[in-house]
Image 1 (tube, rainbow, N blue to C red):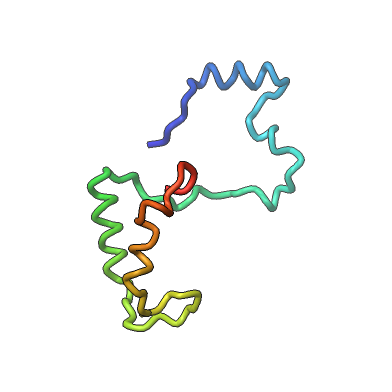
Image 2: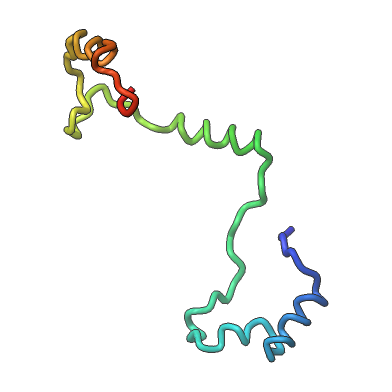
Length: 98
């Protein structure tokens, strides 16, 4: 099943308004060997629940690594507690920097 938001009659009317007889006339400047000559292999649609289950299935195939070596601070490191407390002090707050 495909979703086409217009009727066959409306599509014919639009083509006629453009001076075309077939929708393929829209692609006349595209080389024939560039046009798709077969239907796309697209699976049927899924419900939201089916899609969610499929995504969970795919995500379960991911491998988790204990160590990540990508730099830029993406590693276990120590942040002193004072770093979190200083910005919370009243004298450091302004209307522009909450």
